[in-house]
Length: 388
Image 1 (tube, helix red, strand yellow):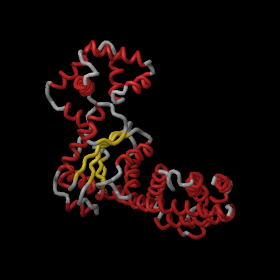
Image 2 (cartoon, helix red, strand yellow; image 1 turned 120 degrees about the horizontal axis):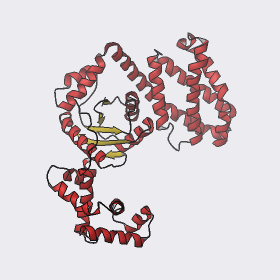
Image 3 (cartoon, helix red, strand yellow; image 1 turned 30 degrees about the horizontal axis):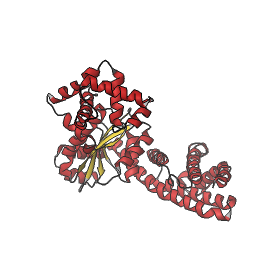
């Protein structure tokens, strides 16, 4: 498929010119545009979609017909077109014209044996792209109405606020035209920085295929039950270009949303305090840490078990890596780039200073818990903004 990719890439300029010319001739909206707009913004959009089709042709479906980041960009392009008052029928017509020109070009440059896979790639791209484009266009029109009237936005925010507060929500759901019956996943989000709210919303909508209730301030999202949350977090990281940590809790019915939101918030706070890597977490993933974090003197006493190592940071690091590697000494030595004998000497020093022997299972568990307690007893992260 690489030879065909090269042949199609060589026709990029002809493809863009042909699509723009046909749009101007066949779609009334484009026919009314100035030539400078057609040759500028419209041609750039066509060229971007052409690049997407080329990548799908080159990859041969290895990463799916449309990569997650490409799909999010399509959503963003469509949202901008809607903000510019481009009718949805004109956008769809442009995509279909582009598909026809792409196929015509394929028949001119492809060998007979290449057309089947290339045609399948084209149809797969349309199947993935058009629903997302239509959804984004509708969302953007909704956002435009919110900017003009503000009512839809207020209703959706009020709906999510009512659900999070355990207040009556049925009338708000009807006004917002959002179905909230049944189960949900309440997800608390933390980013490496401050991603644009619209980009996060577009990514969530494109991944789930449905508008997602999202509070950009409290960073709480209400997702359908059964959603692929690890996949969603990985997709969101790609789209926003930042590490993402998420904590999820199930809400089997709307009345359970407040408790699920509190659980997700507690889990996320623990994940941040413990410095866990990006990803999606549930209470089961931090169950021990959650229990250790309960108020009381036990946490400080447990953390104090490691006070003798305070002046020996390399011993603390060695113990931490050993715990993270499941007490596997070979993997720990490789991670620390030290000889196995050096590792054994360090662990003997840990035992001598703390009085706790890693060779004794009960004492090894106590050392693991002491590490967690030490992390929890450290400085807390900045407080998360509370949900309404």
